[in-house]
Image (cartoon, rainbow over all chains, first blue to last red; front, side, top):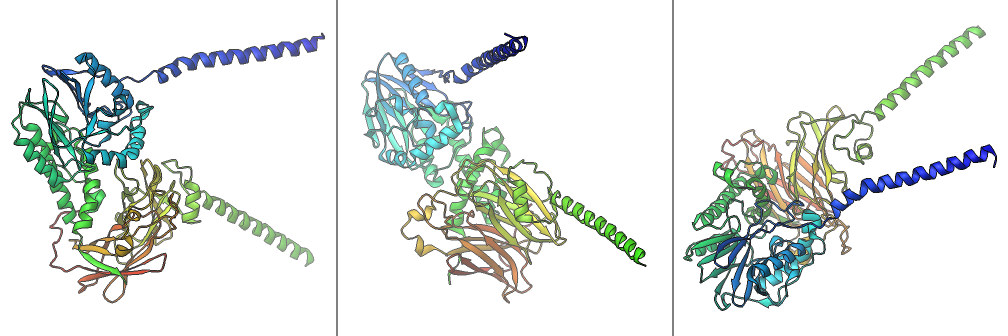
Length: 331
Length: 280
């Protein structure tokens, strides 16, 4: 080997070694980061015991984000002689699986019944973790999910991101109407109402006197209106107020023994409707209506501006279609 | 003599060269007149050439483009383009860089404010821009970034689900409000599918392309050219200056199939005014 080729060979070795070292460094640097990203996301489900055999898993009082994984709605678990009864399944497959495990652990029993209160995605995408025959909803909810499910799944993947991995919509296989279901030591009264959506299921546990108001009631968090009919909603709130109950569990917010939730929700809807109607009557367009101030009392309501902005976009087109006078046609 | 001529032609040649160089330098600088985009859109310079040609371009925050911070429905994104902070606007265009069809509408405010509110489709998150052509030939541009998820342009119109859409096409609704500033605020809604031609169902493009607002004597007050990205059932707000004595506004429209539309919006003085509420 000449000196020259020895040098060449040495430099080859050096280059290869360097590349190997680089590769090692890169992998070394990347692996831990990759691990962190790939670590399975886990919801922190903290069941709050409200009464003998009743737990609330409170949702975050936030919009759906990739941080909270869409766990923003309340979920309720009952212990009954027939098994665990669950109200709403949360935003994702992962949430549903964790919920199922928590319910089994708390009750020491299988899942007897899963109620879906309404079609919104933060309440139904945990269905996958449950036997579809145990999942009960009104015919309107089943129909709505069939129509909207795909769109909701898209929206959830976009906003909640990786938390949604593997999530697919499972439709309920049991259709319910207003009536009573008997689980042995607990009779649960089902009340099919509407207003927040076309079909909102309210549940009343006769034993405890607990009223699960679904998303017809929001406490300390602004109500959402993408499928709302405000007139129906107000009637539903009046009906809810007429049901004697010991404690009310809203769809979003804390469980309380006062009428505050019903009143706040009614006031919010009235405020939003007033602001929007007066904007429309002044000739404002959507962006201008969105910019209007809200009354001071709404300052204590979480997501007030956010939900008001959404509500303008939900309600304004309906007002325009209904209220602008006819002025012309094809010529 | 001969020598003198040569010298003179040499001088002329040098002069011509200098003038030529100057002209080249001017052309170079004209090409560089487009300021950089604060939103860093990859298409900004191409679109600036397309829409503004060689005209001077100035970014101007007095041209407001207002969109909501949250978009749930990409087929109905509310937009306000407002250049009322400027005098001498000849024409206003609105475009969205990253839409498959970028040009959304053009407003020519002859006797009207340089202002238009409407709703548009957004195929994805995109800068939305309002550009005002000024009397001096300059384009003044305002921009905003619209955070949208997508699907607005390629989703079929809602009307396509209704069997009777063809019965309602062209029906117009509207109302006028007399403002304290002497302008009349006009809100107009016209039933129309506004098909982009890009929908998955292969429906060809079918959209209202022109809305002319005229006085009782036929004088053009404002003219709107609409393009495919304007939302289904176009719902617009403009502000026109009605001539003294006119108690209504005539709107003439036409779609790309040649169908024409006519409406008359009452704008009587006794109609509810804005009650002194100022609208910014």
